View (tube, rainbow, N blue to C red):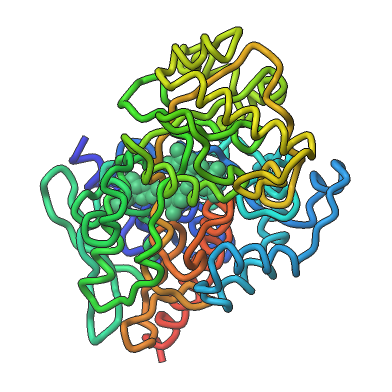
Length: 473
Ligand SMILES: Cc1cc2nc3c(=O)[nH]c(=O)nc-3n(C[C@H](O)[C@H](O)[C@H](O)COP(=O)(O)OP(=O)(O)OC[C@H]3O[C@@H](n4cnc5c(N)ncnc54)[C@H](O)[C@@H]3O)c2cc1C
């Protein structure tokens, strides 16, 4: 096996563009580079492609799409931009946000032209109007890989990049490990698409000590390799203080937890702590709900809802697939609130008082004690929790993705700590920082991985071809 990978590497020779990581960002970069005629080599350290992308809910934030129009959703770029900046508390790099807004519809059309299919549009965290386009993320990465291979790209699995090779200040390749042996691969340019660091305990302790009680939920390959490789040669970082956990994940290591959790709160559930009390406005972005949950006793709370919410069940979107949770036994179900309180071990009188107060606000009899007026963001109207059966889902926060990292410019060049380009080095996807700022809008991590991956492929190809041209002058 190791001999055959090494043989393939030798046979391929030096690529124009060397892509590290075969998640969405890497594969989008591979396709866009190969479309421009570059010889592309993709290295993936695991024995499967997809990374966190393949594990994700696949929700992708686009504005002005056919799917939105078909559902009567009127959207515009000013609102998209304002939502991303407001959720990011204006800590975002506005130039990256502008690129996202400018390129997102074109990227959506490009992905569709490659065979990626988008479905129903959902409202979610940080969105004034529904923008989360559902897709099957595993199928998306397989589709992109197929296109890249058709265009002549080569993928090698089980090859881990360890270090960037630098000559006269330029990144000219990477040192990689293949079954314990080191190899140097020279390339015209390198794209870091290695994902985040949600599985690297030391990096999390260093950059996100506030997440100590959260579950770690990204793909096993999300160990911060790209961040470390860039750091070693002087790359700058952005958004490091803002790592957050997503609310709604079943807290114990349990094979029934797919990793996405559920967000019944966005369909009308309330969040209840172990005292039987509400403690937050459930329409908030789920990262903020994650923070709020981690401050509650035991760092876990219950999403409590009724049959009205259960009827909004959507098996095509993991986070809204409530019946799936019921089928696997992750939901407590009861015909009365007393019975539910007993099952989830909270005081029945407090639970009933919390729900009665909430229901009164839903009926317009009093303002909601936490100011809730919507289901999520600016969308939907809360409904009373009064139709049995009643349900409860134990939930905590999970660091699914890290949303911060290497500083890039609008063309995906990695920048050093002095704000200068590191020649030959490009990055896209979760390994990068700057775009989200202090908060993440649902669908923008998959969104930015495809969008900036595509840009990185173009920029890396240009760089490699320029370098070749200059070498021949
Ligand atoms: C459960 C879950 C649900 C999510 N849901 C959503 C959602 O609905 N919408 C959304 O926008 N975001 C979501 N996210 C976040 C989003 O999926 C990711 O941020 C995004 O897909 C990252 O894409 P990427 O290509 O940058 O990284 P990845 O998809 O993680 O790919 C990186 C690849 O690089 C490989 N790699 C790492 N180091 C090396 C190395 N040294 N050498 C070679 N290869 C290497 C990894 O093994 C991996 O295959 C979710 C995340 C999780 C875990």
